[in-house]
Length: 453
Image (cartoon, rainbow, N blue to C red; front, side, top):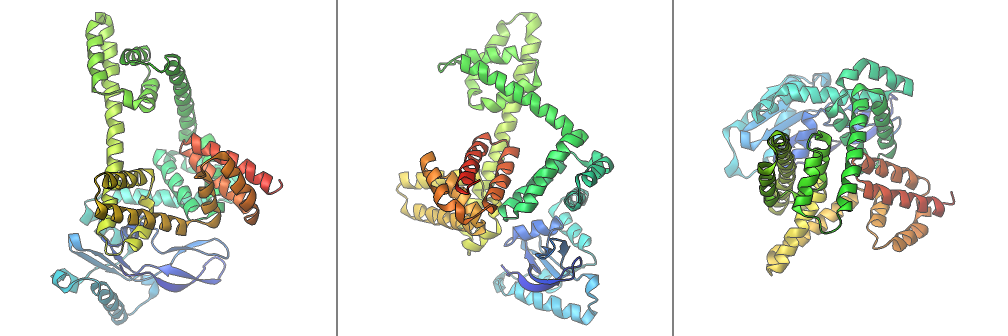
């Protein structure tokens, strides 16, 4: 992969200059993250370290996708570059790109790139080759612009004014976009921005039409979960399939209860359960069968949806693991795709390690252990010192060990540690991970004590 270049950038807001990494050559196979950033309108977007303003650095771009025999050049008009100079620059970039490609893989399209007159034109050509509707990407670009407008708002009143203007556009997809942005800021150590995102989310939950509806839905779901949990716990440890059928029958008319039940007790709904449920329906009074059959059908749909989601997530993790194993430069590939490292990926990696050990496959075991070490190392490299420390505390073997770590090391971080804990807490709380959020509350209390607050 062609590495980014260092470029001096002049901030249009404060006028000060700073150095930034600029991507000029995007190879879809070697740099999938660069492709994603290009399509999302985030490629070469820089944040001024002096005033915090963001700007997109103008630079020539050469995009390559060997699978689709696609090679496109783009030179921003604002560079005012003469045609001869454009040809020279694109030619040099083409040389850099082809230097990493074996000669036997050269194709005719590589000698004459297409050209794009605008950045959007470049994106549209890429999307057309991928079979993706450019309109959907344009909608995502507008959502990102709206996220930036909220971030730039100088007061709660300004945010409320934006809510009134854009209330119809603030929907589930917008909240997902905002959450993903906040999570990325946490991962990059941008604590203040992540905290601002969390504060904006809270305002949107209480001020927007969608947010109010979401809060009501969450309250109903939480009440249903509590009710179902109490029902299941009341049955004790020896709960049977008949007991679960009784619970489904009791809440057959409640969509929110069926959704909560599918999520809460998915392992209970196996093939044998549905066979016994079918028998129960057949034995039910005639006027009750339609009601139970509707609950049966809906529960099956919900279980299938959960399984499909999990399968898709697992398949993505397997493909990523295979791609790491086949990469000529696994360290760089991992660093460029760290956003794909999640709990599912780590679970699959560890399962493969255990399987290789059980099968006494020394070669596979050694390769997988190397992947584990490289991934762990890359994750730690990307973390801010405070974030690394929080992660170490979360992985402590006991509460006593965690308390000791905090008492000994927290003072070296100062109050910045509390800000980072708050940002991580908000992220896990918004994801609904109550267990980790609760442990982070304990860590914050101990950190405050260690810092004398």
